[in-house]
Length: 218
Image (cartoon, rainbow, N blue to C red; front, side, top):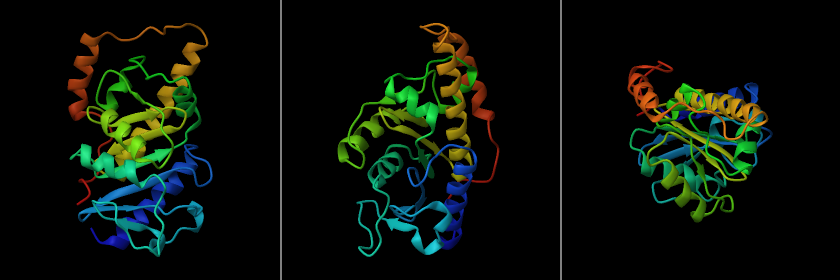
């Protein structure tokens, strides 16, 4: 797909993320796999002011045009693409309920069958490291090895997808699950969960379930 088209899709995804209440200000970032690297949102520019020319190309080694500054989190976006060959889009945000669960340093267990949307019977919480660091990207690589989404301790959420639409859909689903988890934690802890046998059934069904949309990004 042509670069400007993908850049516009990234901007639209950022704006939709705000509409859905998943992010605040310039906190989150969005990328798509492109050529040998990725296109990613820049650092410090409000979403409503973004134009296609602001979207930064970062190659597989982390190199970019020095006149453009990519998001400070570009390292864990690259880590996601290196870890998951099925990922062509990555959405990161500081959604309130996901961030709250991450502060508790807890995974989201199988409280609802929609947990399977992330690819397993839980949604992990990657250990804390300073934002933008190689250490954090290493934690993300481990967490995403067997999942399409992970919380980041004291930070927020990362969600991956075959394209931007699916990545944003998953980010929204995980935020709803985080809200459900916090609501139930207010009543009881530990929260009742679906057993592994049932989650295995659901995971099999999820091979043909979930958001159905266009083909993966090139």
